[in-house]
Structures are given as C-alpha cells and as structure tokens.
Length: 393
Image (cartoon, rainbow, N blue to C red; front, side, top):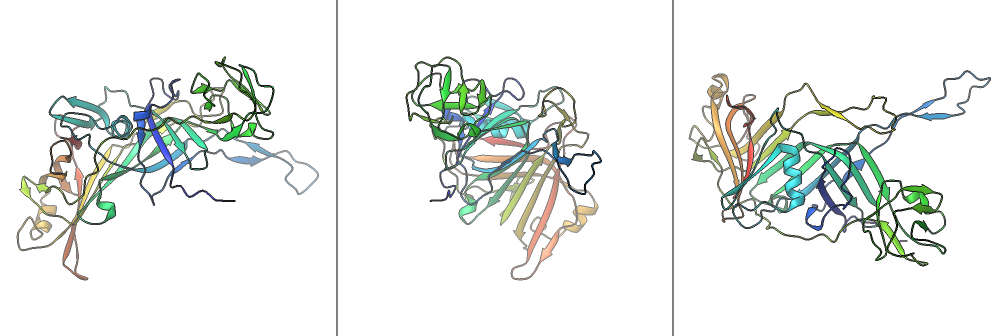
C-alpha cells in the first residue's frame, strides 16, 4: 500500500465571524495558501487521561478517565506572495494569516496594504484552518488564534524566497476522512461503507458527490450513518464522501530574497540574513466548566507583545557595519529598520520597525568571515501599537 508523502497537502485560512464557529459556507477558494515543502505542518489536539482513583482489591489499573480537551496547537509555513498591484491586498488566505497575527489589516487603494498591530480597543481575529493531507483526511480546526510569526529574510538559497511560519492555538478540531456511501441512503441520512463512520464528527463539513449543500454540515453520527440537512437528492451507492476542501485558486507572485536593499536609520545596509519574530500571548481557557468537552473562550494574557529583529551581516570598517555597536548597546541607542524584499511595484514586502534597540551586545563570529549578529527589540512610540508593521506595495 502506498504511503502518503505530504506533497499534495492543502491549507485554507478563514476568518470567523463568531469565535470558534466555522462559517457555514466553508472556506472559500481564495482562502487557500501555498504550503512550503519540507516544513512542519502540525495540527494537534488531545486531552489527558487519568486512572480511576477508586481503591479496588487489585494492583491493576482497570479504567482510564478522560479529561476535558486541551487547546490544540498548530504550525505551518507558507509562501508570502504580494498581489502584483500596489494597493491591492494579498490573496484572502494569506491576508487572514497576517491579519490574525498582527491584529489589523488596512488597505490604501492604489498605494499599499498594511498589517498593523492590535490595539486595546480592537477585537482579536480568530480563524478556522482546514488542513487536507494527501490521503484525503481534512482536519478542521476552529477558534484558531495566531500567536507567533517568524519570517526569515535571506539573500541566497531556496529558503530565501519570501515565506513565513505561523503558529498558535485553536479550540476545536474535527476530522473528516474519505469513504463511499452504502446502499439505502436518504436525503437526510447517509449510509457509509462499513466501519467508516468513525472518520467523521458532528459539526464537520463534508462533500457528498455532486450533491448540495456543499459543504454539508454533519448534524450527528451514529455508527456508519450520518444525519445531515436535507440534500438535493438521495445519494446512491459508492458515492464519494470526504472532508470539504474547495478547489484552491492561486494568485500573487513569489519574491526572491535578494531583491531590495534593507536600511538602518535610512542608510542602505546589506545583510546576510534577518529573522523577524512577532509574538503575542492570548490564552485559550481550558479549565472552564461550561458543559462542553472543548475550550470555548480566551483571554489576553498578562505578558506583553514581543517583536524582535535579528540581523547577521559581514563586518566592515564603518560604524553601521559593526564597529561602535558595543557603545550603542550601553548607550541604548535606537535605530529605524526597514527590511525590504522585492524591487518591483506591486511585488514589494517591507517590514518596518521605526524604533529598535539592541537587546544584548552584538556577537562576532570569526570562524570564516568576520560576521556580526545583532538582536533588536522593536519598541512602540508614544502613540503605541506601532512597534512593527508589514507593508505590501
């Protein structure tokens, strides 16, 4: 039997109107994002089990009891593709990723599209993430909060093409597998091949052949029978049933990392690489007794948002190139950093951090070339919520 390889994995990211509830229309075609081969794709949720605490006349454990589910965890890496037209947002799925991790999405028609940090007055976005493996299983993850983005900027190599890794937590995962119908189905009760009902869960979104509605939301599961809203017809025998995934449309342009020149305090500054990290700390509440087996709410944590930029570059004789950095660290000298990827209108990604301060004294590596690594913390101005932003132009 052939094993799955992951080469055909698909992903969609859909903004939720109601926290933890996937829109009934399912993910849209434009909400697909392109995953990067060779990177982690992880969507996992479980719960603890504990021994029956009753004292019995035995040394054995006779029963395991299941605890309330923990928040799920996710991580994936996608290509970052501008639209090709200045002032036009990137494709919806990518837009939803960046909006969720930054907090806000602002379009200036004909000029640029910006992702800005969440303010105290804003509502934190939540997403539904559908992940389809190449064996047909669709993991449907609702109530996802994007808590971290890591974006590497490099001049050379396959991984220098603009890409970003997102991670975070979600509230509820449902699985929807792949099977066929058995005889005797009606427009509201779908009989599945023997033993395949366990591939599905109530609330999951599925496709049943060419029938509508598509997606169909499962009302309940009993053995190998799915109860569903009234279909456009009764499915016959051997009709394909699977987790819903739209035919993803693809738009945007890949951008090579060598394009564009970064600046530090408005001075061109060639680098070898940079790592941009943006992290926030909302907490999904796992211990609330609300009659459900899954988390259903969250709160913003007490830890402050964290944005950092780490730059590695060749040293040279200029102050900006390396010398004088020890003095800058002890003097808490601040610089403005622009990391620019791309040099063609409509295909430029800029990471702007106007107030950066060294977090620690820079390190020097002389193993081959003389390299310096600086790690900056991105700070907010007196206006707040402007420590870092991402701009598509």
